Image (cartoon, rainbow, N blue to C red; front, top):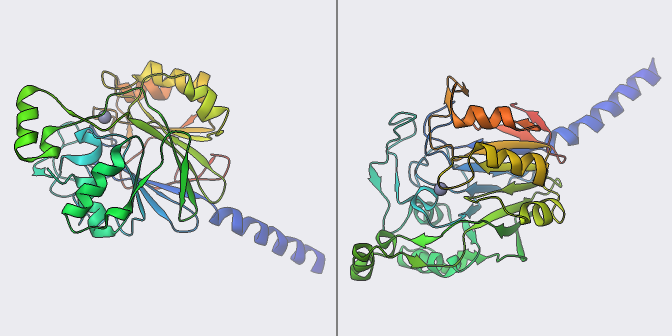
Amino acid sequence: MKRIASLSAAAAVAALPAFAQNVKVTPLGGIDGELCALDRAMVFEDPNGTRVLYDPGMTVAGPDDPRLGKIDVILISHMHGDHVGTAHNKAPNSGTCDKPDTSVSSVPNTNAVDIAVKTRAKIVTGSEMPALFAAKLRANGGDPANSILARFGGSVTIGGVRIATVTAMHSNGVDGDIIGGELGKTMKQAGIAGDVGLATGYVLRFSNGLVAYLSGDTGVTADQERVVRDLYHAKLVVMNIGDTFTTGPTEAAYVINDLVKPESVIPSHANEAGTVNGKARPGSRTEAFMKAVKVSAYLPLSGRTLEFDANGKCAAGC
Ligand SMILES: [Zn+2]
């Protein structure tokens, strides 16, 4: 009797830390419980409590969005308006899933910078984006030292989360509306965008050992095999699937099935109403991707938290 009791107590002790060691992923999309056209934003919460906001875009309803909570780090894959946030919705659940509300302008500041000023989060970007974000923080009462560089091949560790940037085959022009003033207006009229170097993806290593690859907007690259898989061993991937601007469902599935080969994948950047009542919409790119991938795939439904263990296995909310 005593022996059984001590065994089950040992099992409970063994189970507890494992349960507590999950990384929580919560999409902050346009409509609760759905994957909608402009959804990019996700919060990754390390088991140690560090909270990382990825590509706030237009569906985080500005710095006062009640879903944000504490934010320690903001990642911005590149400067396009749907990622850095040149506008945003009035409140969560405004607009419709295929026609999101983007009625509140965020230029020239950007939604990302407004959120960083309010939360005092650090902005970690690659290429030559840190100087732009430092200038924006300075201009808006934030601390320019909170804009931090992680250029390809390097990394920074903040709050126990190691952050590296990786190749994204994409463009990265800064819209004249973000530059602002006469210069911004002249550039916009001429159809010329500002240059802050290459777009990026991210590889995050959380304190429980989970490695996650956030693709950003990208085409298919050999680095997805040689760097993201062979060097970093990513077990969880957030993969952009929207086509035209980034990999479509077939190319994105190839990246997952043949190049990165993670344990789990979360599609993102669908550029369509990807779900209806929380299920992949028949005939959608989202459905095509979910059918084409051979690893476990989980829809990022806004406000629904998924938990992943160190090996990238979905442990809760799946
Ligand atoms: Zn995009």
